[in-house]
Length: 112
Image 1: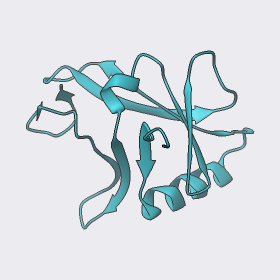
Image 2: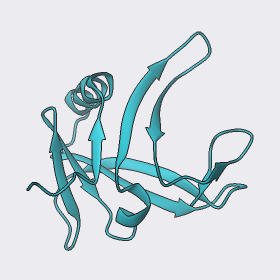
Image 3: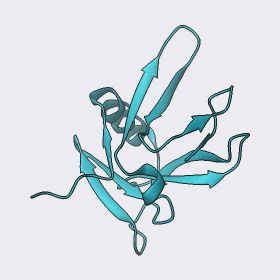
């Protein structure tokens, strides 16, 4: 039986990450996802280009994109799906996270 992925991407998110990676001048192997303590609800997602794998990171490959998950964030992101959403007001990555118990009014932070 396969171990469940810590995180998956929608088709839209995978395509957007590939587009962004192709535009960078650095040599990147994927995106690093983590959480940081900030915002009204306590935690916010952080994402950056990954140039190399770091010790103890969980590495997930989905739809041709390598996701490196900060070891301190794994338990907060388990089972999450990253999506790319475009509407009239904004374009952004959205995390559909089954571990979230609540979010702040602006939607920038969450708590588990």
